[in-house]
Image (cartoon, rainbow, N blue to C red; front, side, top):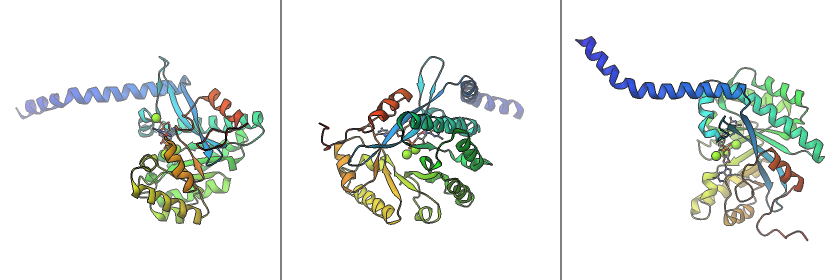
Length: 288
Ligand code: C2E
Ligand code: MG
Ligand code: MG
Ligand code: MG
């Protein structure tokens, strides 16, 4: 009897559980296939210099073009790629593709563009990550000073001690390290003090409300001042309005990223932007 009841109970959960397990397994299978079929592509979002609009670099953002031609955003597959460990292979492909693109653009443009690449916690904690980076730098021939790896504060919370030596090795290789989504996690000042960070990215949740929320403006102002006093550079993400731009420019934020200037664009799109070399910013003189 107990056995029967148990079985009935199991049945109650069975349907919804197997549905989600099934969907997950199917998605995982699709992700593996996507790797094999080269369905991933990189889009690039310009990072401009405040005041001039000069494009100093780009952030590489992965997309998945599935077999129906539909473009899938990273939020919809990166978490699963992380859970399954597939992010290690995918991340290596992303890094190599981004570095190769940087080198190609240098040949075409005659100048170096800073290439920022997002690194997942799983990659950073995988054995040999620094060696992987060293190898890719060597293979592609990128000047490591123009490669920036973006890590998020959330990955530092429980593993500061294991992450620090990896970051130190990355700095020895000569790559830059940005702390992404700053302000969303614990934002411990310890990170800035102990880790070899070269740049800090203020999260777009602060940028969003700069106009309306006085406190956000004060916090952003303090972050920028602090970062400058530590001799680091600061980028703000998610600028969508002229008003947000004006405030950040006034607060002397060094670099900016946001839909106001450009959305992430594909390889052809970014080459067109890089050829011009700058984007229009509010208040800049139209070139005669
Ligand atoms: P992130 O690194 O903070 O990247 C910035 C995200 O904000 C991008 O979304 C970008 O399109 C979006 N964004 C930038 N400016 C604006 C704006 O003005 N308005 C709005 N509404 N959005 C803006 P995306 O490409 O969907 O990427 C989301 C997240 O997925 C990234 O956040 C990053 O954490 C992750 N991701 C993207 N590409 C990669 C990758 O190659 N590897 C890894 N590990 N993670 C990635
Ligand atoms: Mg998106
Ligand atoms: Mg990023
Ligand atoms: Mg971010």
